Amino acid sequence: MSDAEPRPGNAGDEERSLSGLRLLAEAGAVLGSSLDPDDLLHRLSRLTVPELADWCVADYVGEHVRRVAVVHRDPGVELPDDLLGKLPDPEPVDPASSSPLERMLAGEGPFVFTDRSEVTSALGQAHRDLTDALGTGTEILVPLRARRRVLGGLVLVRTTHDRPVTESELVLLQDLAHRAGLALDNARLYSAQRDAAQNFQRALLPALPDLKQVELAARYAPAQENVEVGGDWYDVVVLPDGVPAVTVGDVSGHDLTAAVEMARLQNMLRTLAWEHQEPPSAIMRRLDGLLEYFSAHTATAIYARLNGGGGEPLTFHWTNAGHYPPLLVLEDGTSRFLEEGYDVLLGVGGDWDRADARVELPRGATLLLYTDGLVERRGEEIDRGLVRLRQHAAQFAGESPDVLCDGLLSHMSESSGDDIVLLALRAP
Image (tube, rainbow, N blue to C red):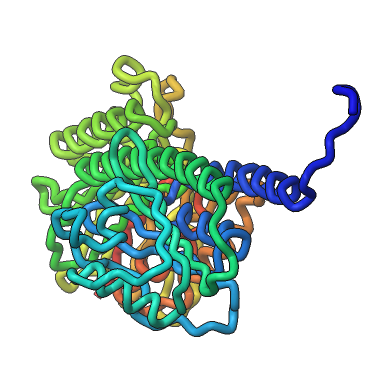
């Protein structure tokens, strides 16, 4: 046979090689599609069953070891209710007595076991309980590492001994584990950055005062799609004349600069309101003048004074600088947007003659101020978002501001790509 002629090969080996390449290609797509560690491990487990195992369990190593995914090839298999969640902390590894799971979580492996080892620890017993429930045979334990750190592990189980683990499958699993470790490390870093950004944003938002004339509630919900801080804020402060001043606003941009600018703008507005107990429109004109010299950002905001209470009618006296209109919800569920007092946004320059508006808050009515993340959706007309807000708010008519805010976030925040701030005021 000449060198130019094709050499005969094993069709089974070729098929397994092609199957492995397909699996790695799918893994690349799966591991690049999420930045949530639990979601990554769920997807990875589903990828390996039934291609490489009859069932698979994935653990994540963070502050504690958590079992986050169990996937079985038979959808009819009932998994125990307490299967997922925190696992006992691993004990110091002793090669002579530690369970294979503990050795894997310490960074050893991959391992292949066909015999059941003696259980000497709580973590080993937790794994034994799992295999008792789902069946055992051949176990393949693969650590998921990155930057010399163990971030998780996969345990793949074949419940019969007639399917031996080949050297090529071990190589494939090591390649898969390497990619998964890098993906988990990226997800871990992303989560840390996101948490830091959200904590910074929350630290900039004030605590609400205890007001006798009105019930208050506020919420901040960070965007789910990025780690950037935003420029959304709320504020309630009692002025020297005893009148509460209420603000909700949004600075343009979604980065650290926007958050810092939001804090500056909030403080400037507080200072102006404290020093000049003037109508809202006059305070906003003063703020316009300051922004012309001290800021290159634009912002939308509603600033209001809450007059009355203590037996007198409660009046919301406001001006609106390019912000979405407040929503007034009566006890019977009827509602309307307060579109009066609307003018251009802050920071566009010019000496704008802003308008004031007033509305009396009926007893039991709730006034909701919010930012654009609550109603805006990519590719959707804004009118649909505003209608959706009215429909959901009507379900909580007559409820406390806390119930209203939590209900709206539960119904409307999941698909939001932006931060959300809510501030609700209820007339007693």
